[in-house]
Image (tube, rainbow, N blue to C red; front, side):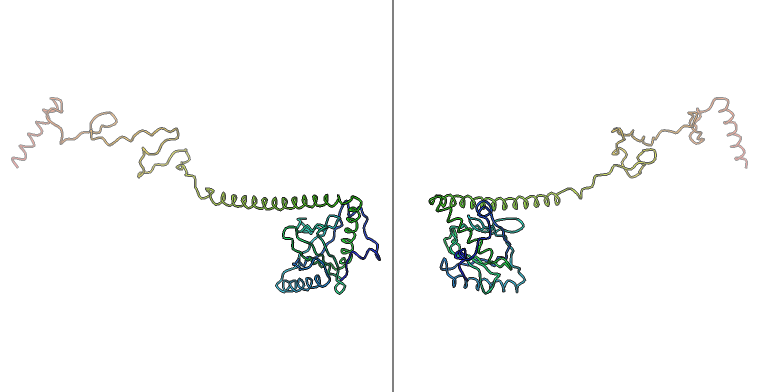
Length: 291
């Protein structure tokens, strides 16, 4: 492996200064991962790190895991490692913390750089796999270093502090974006739980009591076993009570009592009729006596 920063003597830079100072150069690659190293630079240091991460990649590949794809954004401020679809920043390696960068001459797909972590102060070696752009990416990082160093000389060192402040602000923005994403996921989970709770507690099984069915005349049918006074009419009033059976003597349609010869007394008929009845009774009695 060779230092990328020494190549500007025999190779021209690939990008305009404005592209790296005002914008960034994007590249796509596969991220094999990062591992801690003891030294901030050195060919053997990165070679051991590459062997270690390649071995870990083979193990993951045998387990069915794919190597994650990432997008690299290279500028004079550093190298950002993003998720390609969501553009979420996974790592933000500030340029002044990168101490070594190289591509592998034995495997032209592999390139790597060493960066000092801002929180743990450990030196981490980042290893990437790019089929055709490994050397180009290494040269682009070298060009970013060259432009940053020129700006440092032109500003008398003030630009370094500015870049540090910008890097701190970028780190803060990254943390806020991550926190915002986590809060959105929590809100989504709470909304899903609330929706499930509302569905499970909704009165889907309740049945509205039905009113008594009516006939074609909109009348409630008569039921001999039902208590009539318990069924209200349509207008809310109770129906009139059914008259109980009376013990009084029934009368015919003319208002007269029906004839009952066994209940007739002597004073129930007029005198002329009563006398004839008495005579008929005596004759009947005489006939039965002589017989």
